[in-house]
Structures are given as C-alpha cells and as structure tokens.
Image 1 (cartoon, rainbow, N blue to C red):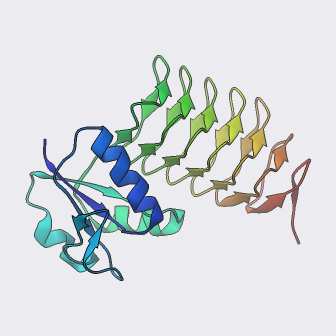
Image 2: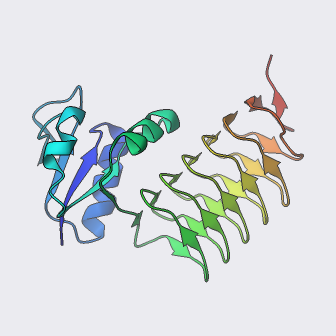
Image 3: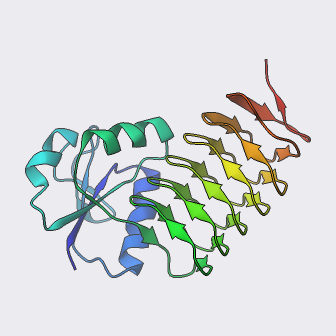
Amino acid sequence: MNRLIIIGAGGHGRVIADNAIRNGYTAINFIDDNVVGSCMGFPVIGTSADVERLNDGKTDFIIGIGDNSTRRMFADRFQVNWITLVHPSAQIGTSVLIGKGTVIMAGAVVNTFAKVGNHCIINTGAVIEHDNTIEDYVHISPGVKLGGRVHIGQLTHVGIGAVVINNTNIYSDCVIGAGAVVVQEIKHSGTYIGVPARRTI
C-alpha cells in the first residue's frame, strides 16, 4: 500500500489517521503549517509548501481539516492522488457514489443511491438516507440524520445532531446549528438554528 500524507495534524487529522490505520495504511505522515515533530506517533514531515516536492506519484493524500473552505483551498491548490477513506464500521448501501478526498467515519450510514461529493466529511454516526445528494466540501457532523432525498449544497456545514426531514434542499454555504431541525427548504446562505431551524440575524 502507498504511503499516505495527511494535510493537517489537528484533531480531525488524527481521526483520519485512525481511519487510515484501520484501512491498512502503515506508512503515514502528516504535513502541517503550524505543528512540528509528530502526531499520533507519525512524523510531521513539512508544511503545505512541501506538497509539490512530496508528490512523487506513489503517495496518497487526504486533507485532515474540518473547515470546508480551507479544505477546498487545498484541494484546488494541489493536483495529487486524493484518496477516499471509508471506516470499516461504516455501512455503505448499494449504488452509492463517493467522491475523491471524502472521508466516511466510524458508524456512519450512507444508504442506497446516495451521492457524496468530493472532499466531504461524513462524520461519526451520521445517517445519510437513500437518494441524498451531498455536494462537494460539505461537512456532516457526528449524529446528523438526513431523511431520504435530501440535497445539501456545497460548503455547507451541518452541525452535531441536526435533523433534516425528507425531500428537503439546503442551499450552498450554509451552517445548520447543532441540534437544529430543518423542516423546509433553505434557499439562502446563512446560519440556521433551532427547532424548527430559522435563519439568524
């Protein structure tokens, strides 16, 4: 198996490293613009300025950063072999499509005919029901539950424990607060909190 380089040695990067280990990776390195030394016992071998030098065609890469916009910046900046990581305990249904650079964490469920875009995070224990469309650079937080035929626009962050009912569209670049319940279409960017979810001023 190729060496894996994780961009970002913070908390999310560490969870990705654990996911990678469970997928059989043994040669793991981190790069980080602020962290030096090691992370989870694996060396931090440079900063983002070193990606081009480290891209030898035999190395896999993934972005270990939770912020959607930062993840997009790095994905746009570098042309490398972005991998997809699916935790062995995740449940992936029939005819699911998962984009490059996306990570599916422990205990997540992605049901049949769902589509998950590039460089997304489907975090611990999240449920993505049938026929969902999750666009690029979306973060679905732990414990989120999306009903069937939900559409989440790019760069949207769905907070911990939020619920979105069936057949609901959420616009790009939104933040859905922790524990919010979305019961109708969200047509504009912004932050939405509460039960039912409403846009904050």
